[in-house]
Image: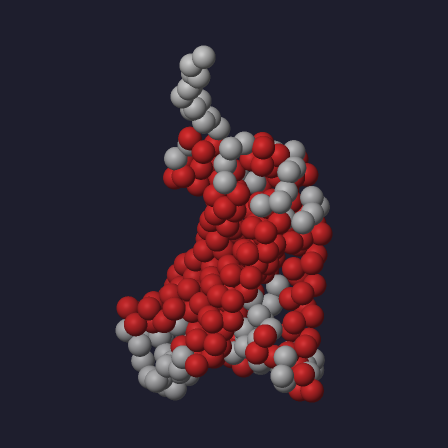
Length: 292
């Protein structure tokens, strides 16, 4: 009896869809969420509010007698300085709002779809889990880029409208050209985006283990607060190099000096890359064993 060999059936499902099409669909899904647009709009307004506020106060370093964590000095430098304003706004938002945007995106990417029952279609379809994670990570990374760039654009425009193009000074007193100032601002933006990618990777790792998006957001923000507190404890100096939030408030200020420093920026970038690798690895390990 002759065995009849049948040609394997053509695979159907998400793996037949080109990756660019999947990425475009993910972005459409992300930027149709009202909460995503609301957070991006809020972040874009922060430099505008700060710029207007600095023109209305007499002493920007006066915090009402409360503790000063360095923000007052940075705000004082932003007065009549279109170069410092966007950087000061981004640094202040690093404390909560920018991590919130990345955490929300990471929570919606996996836990949010699990809660709505849409992730199961991805998991049971003949699509690689690595491909699934790549699409979700791309969406989270795009939100982080959009958030930081929105602040940069509104910060630069606000600073130039209020102070003019002749107000681009470093903290060392040297004057920058418009192109030079924009290059340094983009350097800070790229560094902050890398930090937010690390936050997003951690959010994806947590999101892959739960179906409750708010739990992901709460966990990431709680970790942000705990890391910040641990960074103030001198008795834990040995732990500080491992904290993602270490030097978040001071590293961007290196670009405000002339000559520009890079030590803190380099350390922060390396630390963020380590968090990205660990976070995405944990997320992939969970997705590779998940059925629904």
